[in-house]
Length: 116
Image (cartoon, rainbow, N blue to C red; front, top):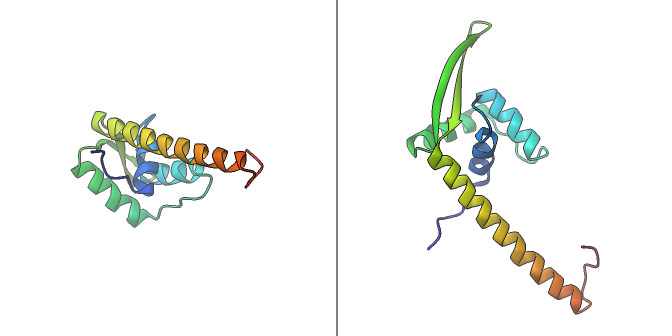
């Protein structure tokens, strides 16, 4: 049996952290950029999600620094987090492939849409 689908904000948070550690606002900006503006995280939502992801072992604190007198806590993806993101990516890919095949069958019957 496969794992339950990941919530979309979780997927994007893990994706934002995949290449390098980021602090909260950096995660928010990267998620917005990667999702072409479809996902806009609020700070409260992000930090609640990060706390949950830390508890699950998918993300861990990386370091803290002070910028303009304000602390920044950086987070990084763990190996378990990368594994979970990889599994979710494979699940999404399989879903896209199934839908693509069904739409191709629909087009073969002349039912449209005609663009591919």
